[in-house]
Image (cartoon, rainbow, N blue to C red; front, side, top):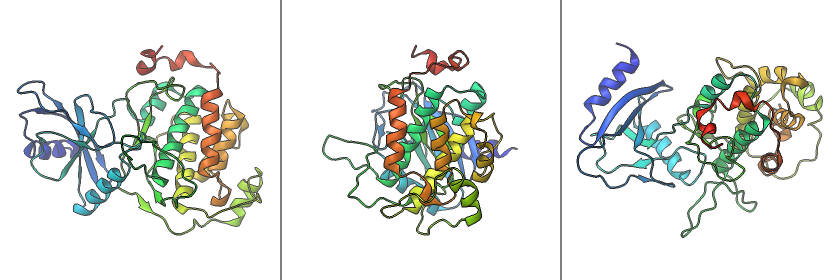
Length: 337
Protein backbone atom coordinates (compact mmCIF):
# COMPACT_ATOMS: atom_id res chain seq x y z
CA UNK A 1 0.00 0.00 0.00
CA UNK A 2 1.34 3.46 -0.91
CA UNK A 3 2.12 6.13 1.68
CA UNK A 4 -0.83 8.21 0.47
CA UNK A 5 -3.18 5.22 0.81
CA UNK A 6 -1.90 4.52 4.33
CA UNK A 7 -2.44 8.14 5.33
CA UNK A 8 -5.95 8.12 3.90
CA UNK A 9 -6.77 4.89 5.72
CA UNK A 10 -5.56 6.36 9.02
CA UNK A 11 -7.63 9.48 8.40
CA UNK A 12 -10.72 7.35 7.80
CA UNK A 13 -10.31 5.73 11.22
CA UNK A 14 -10.20 9.15 12.90
CA UNK A 15 -13.02 10.61 10.79
CA UNK A 16 -16.70 10.98 11.60
CA UNK A 17 -18.52 11.24 8.29
CA UNK A 18 -21.88 12.44 9.53
CA UNK A 19 -21.49 15.92 8.04
CA UNK A 20 -18.32 15.68 5.95
CA UNK A 21 -16.79 13.45 3.27
CA UNK A 22 -13.11 12.57 2.92
CA UNK A 23 -11.90 13.17 -0.65
CA UNK A 24 -8.20 12.41 -1.04
CA UNK A 25 -4.69 12.62 0.35
CA UNK A 26 -3.25 15.76 -1.19
CA UNK A 27 0.38 15.53 -0.08
CA UNK A 28 2.74 13.54 2.13
CA UNK A 29 6.18 14.80 3.09
CA UNK A 30 8.22 17.11 5.30
CA UNK A 31 7.00 15.26 8.38
CA UNK A 32 3.31 15.82 7.69
CA UNK A 33 0.36 14.85 5.51
CA UNK A 34 -2.53 16.81 3.99
CA UNK A 35 -6.02 15.34 3.52
CA UNK A 36 -8.84 17.11 1.70
CA UNK A 37 -12.49 16.82 2.72
CA UNK A 38 -15.78 18.63 2.18
CA UNK A 39 -19.21 19.15 3.66
CA UNK A 40 -21.52 16.38 2.39
CA UNK A 41 -24.55 18.63 1.87
CA UNK A 42 -26.92 16.31 3.70
CA UNK A 43 -28.30 16.16 7.21
CA UNK A 44 -29.04 19.14 9.44
CA UNK A 45 -27.60 22.51 8.45
CA UNK A 46 -24.37 23.23 10.30
CA UNK A 47 -23.42 26.60 11.73
CA UNK A 48 -20.97 28.50 9.55
CA UNK A 49 -17.32 27.57 9.83
CA UNK A 50 -15.22 30.18 11.56
CA UNK A 51 -11.97 31.22 9.95
CA UNK A 52 -9.50 32.93 12.21
CA UNK A 53 -8.70 36.21 10.51
CA UNK A 54 -10.99 35.78 7.50
CA UNK A 55 -14.34 34.96 5.98
CA UNK A 56 -15.96 31.49 5.95
CA UNK A 57 -14.65 29.19 3.21
CA UNK A 58 -16.77 27.50 0.55
CA UNK A 59 -17.28 24.10 2.16
CA UNK A 60 -14.07 22.33 1.17
CA UNK A 61 -11.20 22.08 3.67
CA UNK A 62 -7.89 20.43 4.30
CA UNK A 63 -6.72 18.64 7.44
CA UNK A 64 -3.05 18.47 8.31
CA UNK A 65 -1.44 15.88 10.56
CA UNK A 66 2.18 15.73 11.72
CA UNK A 67 4.39 12.65 12.21
CA UNK A 68 6.94 14.18 14.58
CA UNK A 69 4.84 14.34 17.71
CA UNK A 70 3.07 17.24 19.36
CA UNK A 71 5.84 19.84 19.05
CA UNK A 72 5.82 20.51 15.25
CA UNK A 73 2.02 20.64 15.29
CA UNK A 74 1.90 23.06 18.22
CA UNK A 75 4.61 25.23 16.68
CA UNK A 76 2.92 25.54 13.29
CA UNK A 77 -0.52 26.16 14.81
CA UNK A 78 0.92 28.84 17.06
CA UNK A 79 2.59 30.57 14.11
CA UNK A 80 -0.57 30.44 12.00
CA UNK A 81 -2.55 31.91 14.86
CA UNK A 82 -0.08 34.77 15.13
CA UNK A 83 -0.37 35.34 11.34
CA UNK A 84 -4.15 34.93 11.24
CA UNK A 85 -4.87 38.44 9.95
CA UNK A 86 -2.45 38.23 7.05
CA UNK A 87 -4.07 38.08 3.64
CA UNK A 88 -1.15 36.06 2.27
CA UNK A 89 -0.87 33.17 4.75
CA UNK A 90 -3.13 30.09 4.90
CA UNK A 91 -5.79 30.31 7.60
CA UNK A 92 -6.90 27.96 10.34
CA UNK A 93 -10.58 26.94 10.41
CA UNK A 94 -12.77 26.15 13.41
CA UNK A 95 -15.41 23.72 12.18
CA UNK A 96 -18.71 23.06 13.93
CA UNK A 97 -18.94 19.32 14.56
CA UNK A 98 -15.29 18.80 13.67
CA UNK A 99 -15.24 15.43 11.87
CA UNK A 100 -11.87 14.39 13.26
CA UNK A 101 -12.22 12.54 16.53
CA UNK A 102 -8.68 13.25 17.81
CA UNK A 103 -6.50 16.31 18.01
CA UNK A 104 -3.81 15.03 15.66
CA UNK A 105 -5.55 16.78 12.76
CA UNK A 106 -5.75 20.56 12.31
CA UNK A 107 -8.26 22.01 9.83
CA UNK A 108 -7.26 24.79 7.43
CA UNK A 109 -8.80 26.55 4.47
CA UNK A 110 -8.60 24.83 1.07
CA UNK A 111 -6.85 27.01 -1.53
CA UNK A 112 -8.42 25.98 -4.80
CA UNK A 113 -6.19 27.80 -7.30
CA UNK A 114 -3.34 25.30 -7.19
CA UNK A 115 0.32 25.86 -6.46
CA UNK A 116 2.77 28.23 -8.09
CA UNK A 117 4.48 25.14 -9.51
CA UNK A 118 1.20 24.00 -11.11
CA UNK A 119 0.73 27.46 -12.59
CA UNK A 120 4.26 27.61 -13.99
CA UNK A 121 3.97 24.15 -15.55
CA UNK A 122 0.60 25.05 -17.09
CA UNK A 123 1.47 28.45 -18.51
CA UNK A 124 5.00 27.58 -19.61
CA UNK A 125 8.10 29.70 -19.90
CA UNK A 126 6.64 33.12 -20.75
CA UNK A 127 4.46 34.74 -18.12
CA UNK A 128 3.24 38.32 -18.62
CA UNK A 129 5.24 40.86 -16.65
CA UNK A 130 2.08 42.26 -15.11
CA UNK A 131 1.27 38.85 -13.64
CA UNK A 132 4.81 38.44 -12.29
CA UNK A 133 4.58 41.82 -10.54
CA UNK A 134 1.28 40.77 -8.95
CA UNK A 135 2.73 37.51 -7.62
CA UNK A 136 5.86 39.34 -6.45
CA UNK A 137 3.76 41.83 -4.48
CA UNK A 138 1.92 39.00 -2.72
CA UNK A 139 5.25 37.47 -1.70
CA UNK A 140 6.55 40.81 -0.43
CA UNK A 141 3.40 41.26 1.65
CA UNK A 142 3.79 37.76 3.07
CA UNK A 143 7.31 38.77 4.17
CA UNK A 144 5.85 41.88 5.80
CA UNK A 145 3.29 39.71 7.60
CA UNK A 146 6.03 37.53 9.06
CA UNK A 147 7.99 40.59 10.19
CA UNK A 148 5.03 42.59 11.49
CA UNK A 149 2.21 40.18 12.43
CA UNK A 150 -1.09 42.08 12.21
CA UNK A 151 -3.16 42.45 15.33
CA UNK A 152 -6.88 43.13 15.13
CA UNK A 153 -7.79 46.41 16.79
CA UNK A 154 -11.53 46.87 17.29
CA UNK A 155 -13.32 46.31 14.01
CA UNK A 156 -10.50 47.54 11.82
CA UNK A 157 -7.54 45.60 10.48
CA UNK A 158 -4.75 46.97 8.33
CA UNK A 159 -2.96 43.79 7.30
CA UNK A 160 0.66 43.61 6.23
CA UNK A 161 1.75 47.05 7.30
CA UNK A 162 5.34 48.09 8.01
CA UNK A 163 5.67 49.87 11.35
CA UNK A 164 8.98 51.80 11.43
CA UNK A 165 8.84 52.29 15.20
CA UNK A 166 8.22 48.59 15.95
CA UNK A 167 10.98 46.00 16.27
CA UNK A 168 10.19 43.45 13.52
CA UNK A 169 9.94 39.73 14.20
CA UNK A 170 12.85 37.65 12.89
CA UNK A 171 10.64 34.78 11.68
CA UNK A 172 11.89 33.01 8.56
CA UNK A 173 9.70 30.55 6.64
CA UNK A 174 12.72 28.42 5.62
CA UNK A 175 10.78 26.25 3.18
CA UNK A 176 9.58 28.78 0.64
CA UNK A 177 9.26 27.01 -2.70
CA UNK A 178 6.61 26.92 -5.47
CA UNK A 179 4.73 23.95 -3.95
CA UNK A 180 4.28 25.88 -0.70
CA UNK A 181 2.82 28.95 -2.41
CA UNK A 182 -0.84 28.45 -3.36
CA UNK A 183 -3.38 30.53 -5.26
CA UNK A 184 -6.64 31.46 -3.59
CA UNK A 185 -9.90 31.70 -5.56
CA UNK A 186 -10.03 34.35 -8.29
CA UNK A 187 -11.60 37.37 -6.64
CA UNK A 188 -10.10 40.55 -8.15
CA UNK A 189 -9.54 43.36 -5.73
CA UNK A 190 -8.46 46.50 -7.51
CA UNK A 191 -5.17 46.54 -9.38
CA UNK A 192 -3.36 44.01 -7.21
CA UNK A 193 -5.42 40.96 -8.23
CA UNK A 194 -7.04 41.84 -11.53
CA UNK A 195 -4.70 39.48 -13.41
CA UNK A 196 -3.99 36.78 -10.82
CA UNK A 197 -5.54 35.56 -7.59
CA UNK A 198 -3.86 36.29 -4.29
CA UNK A 199 -1.16 33.78 -3.36
CA UNK A 200 -0.70 32.49 0.18
CA UNK A 201 2.14 30.76 2.00
CA UNK A 202 1.55 27.33 3.50
CA UNK A 203 3.61 24.82 5.52
CA UNK A 204 5.39 26.59 8.37
CA UNK A 205 6.77 23.29 9.72
CA UNK A 206 10.38 24.42 9.27
CA UNK A 207 9.86 28.07 10.19
CA UNK A 208 12.06 29.50 12.90
CA UNK A 209 13.32 32.78 14.25
CA UNK A 210 16.86 33.54 13.10
CA UNK A 211 19.33 35.39 15.29
CA UNK A 212 22.63 34.85 13.51
CA UNK A 213 23.72 36.99 10.58
CA UNK A 214 24.01 34.94 7.40
CA UNK A 215 27.56 33.87 6.52
CA UNK A 216 28.93 34.43 3.01
CA UNK A 217 32.19 34.41 1.05
CA UNK A 218 33.77 37.72 0.09
CA UNK A 219 34.67 36.29 -3.30
CA UNK A 220 31.01 35.56 -4.03
CA UNK A 221 30.02 39.06 -2.92
CA UNK A 222 32.62 40.51 -5.29
CA UNK A 223 31.50 38.35 -8.22
CA UNK A 224 27.77 39.13 -7.80
CA UNK A 225 27.00 42.09 -5.53
CA UNK A 226 29.87 44.34 -6.58
CA UNK A 227 29.64 43.30 -10.23
CA UNK A 228 26.02 44.46 -10.34
CA UNK A 229 26.66 47.55 -8.24
CA UNK A 230 24.76 46.41 -5.13
CA UNK A 231 27.64 46.58 -2.67
CA UNK A 232 29.28 49.56 -0.96
CA UNK A 233 25.97 51.41 -0.74
CA UNK A 234 25.18 53.37 2.44
CA UNK A 235 23.51 51.15 5.03
CA UNK A 236 21.47 52.54 7.89
CA UNK A 237 19.67 50.78 10.72
CA UNK A 238 19.87 47.27 12.06
CA UNK A 239 19.46 44.28 9.76
CA UNK A 240 17.05 41.45 10.59
CA UNK A 241 18.29 37.91 9.75
CA UNK A 242 14.73 36.56 9.38
CA UNK A 243 13.71 39.29 6.94
CA UNK A 244 16.97 38.95 4.98
CA UNK A 245 16.42 35.19 4.68
CA UNK A 246 12.83 35.63 3.47
CA UNK A 247 13.85 38.22 0.87
CA UNK A 248 16.49 35.82 -0.49
CA UNK A 249 13.81 33.11 -0.63
CA UNK A 250 11.29 35.16 -2.61
CA UNK A 251 14.12 36.20 -4.92
CA UNK A 252 14.71 32.52 -5.70
CA UNK A 253 10.98 31.97 -6.27
CA UNK A 254 10.74 34.92 -8.67
CA UNK A 255 13.87 33.73 -10.51
CA UNK A 256 12.13 30.36 -10.86
CA UNK A 257 9.14 32.12 -12.45
CA UNK A 258 11.31 33.74 -15.12
CA UNK A 259 12.82 30.62 -16.65
CA UNK A 260 11.52 27.33 -18.07
CA UNK A 261 9.63 24.98 -15.76
CA UNK A 262 11.98 23.11 -13.41
CA UNK A 263 11.58 19.97 -11.36
CA UNK A 264 12.92 21.74 -8.27
CA UNK A 265 13.69 25.18 -6.91
CA UNK A 266 17.35 25.89 -7.64
CA UNK A 267 19.85 27.33 -5.19
CA UNK A 268 20.58 31.05 -5.05
CA UNK A 269 23.97 30.36 -6.66
CA UNK A 270 22.35 28.56 -9.60
CA UNK A 271 19.85 31.36 -10.13
CA UNK A 272 22.58 33.99 -10.02
CA UNK A 273 24.23 32.18 -12.93
CA UNK A 274 20.96 32.00 -14.86
CA UNK A 275 20.17 35.66 -14.28
CA UNK A 276 23.45 36.80 -15.83
CA UNK A 277 21.54 36.79 -19.12
CA UNK A 278 19.80 40.16 -19.45
CA UNK A 279 17.26 38.63 -21.85
CA UNK A 280 15.88 36.26 -19.21
CA UNK A 281 13.18 38.79 -18.26
CA UNK A 282 11.02 41.09 -20.42
CA UNK A 283 11.40 43.77 -17.72
CA UNK A 284 14.77 45.31 -16.88
CA UNK A 285 13.39 46.64 -13.58
CA UNK A 286 11.96 43.27 -12.55
CA UNK A 287 15.28 41.58 -13.31
CA UNK A 288 17.16 44.21 -11.30
CA UNK A 289 14.97 43.77 -8.20
CA UNK A 290 15.20 39.97 -8.32
CA UNK A 291 18.98 40.19 -8.66
CA UNK A 292 19.11 42.48 -5.63
CA UNK A 293 17.01 40.01 -3.61
CA UNK A 294 19.63 37.37 -4.47
CA UNK A 295 22.54 39.49 -3.20
CA UNK A 296 25.23 37.38 -1.51
CA UNK A 297 25.74 39.80 1.36
CA UNK A 298 22.37 40.23 3.13
CA UNK A 299 23.02 43.94 3.76
CA UNK A 300 22.91 44.43 -0.02
CA UNK A 301 19.39 43.03 -0.34
CA UNK A 302 16.59 45.58 -0.48
CA UNK A 303 14.88 46.55 2.75
CA UNK A 304 11.24 45.56 3.05
CA UNK A 305 9.96 49.12 2.76
CA UNK A 306 12.02 49.73 -0.39
CA UNK A 307 10.99 46.41 -1.90
CA UNK A 308 7.32 47.10 -1.19
CA UNK A 309 7.49 50.55 -2.73
CA UNK A 310 9.20 49.39 -5.92
CA UNK A 311 7.04 46.32 -6.53
CA UNK A 312 3.78 48.00 -5.58
CA UNK A 313 4.48 50.91 -7.92
CA UNK A 314 4.86 48.51 -10.83
CA UNK A 315 1.63 46.64 -10.02
CA UNK A 316 -0.28 49.91 -10.08
CA UNK A 317 1.43 51.43 -13.12
CA UNK A 318 2.40 48.53 -15.41
CA UNK A 319 -0.03 48.54 -18.34
CA UNK A 320 1.81 46.08 -20.60
CA UNK A 321 -0.27 43.43 -22.38
CA UNK A 322 2.44 41.16 -23.82
CA UNK A 323 1.99 37.40 -24.18
CA UNK A 324 -1.59 37.47 -22.96
CA UNK A 325 -2.95 34.84 -25.38
CA UNK A 326 -1.18 31.89 -23.74
CA UNK A 327 -1.87 33.23 -20.29
CA UNK A 328 -5.63 33.35 -20.90
CA UNK A 329 -5.70 29.54 -20.80
CA UNK A 330 -5.93 29.79 -17.02
CA UNK A 331 -9.56 29.22 -16.07
CA UNK A 332 -9.47 31.63 -13.17
CA UNK A 333 -8.36 34.53 -15.34
CA UNK A 334 -11.02 33.79 -17.95
CA UNK A 335 -13.64 34.30 -15.27
CA UNK A 336 -12.43 37.84 -14.71
CA UNK A 337 -12.35 39.03 -18.33
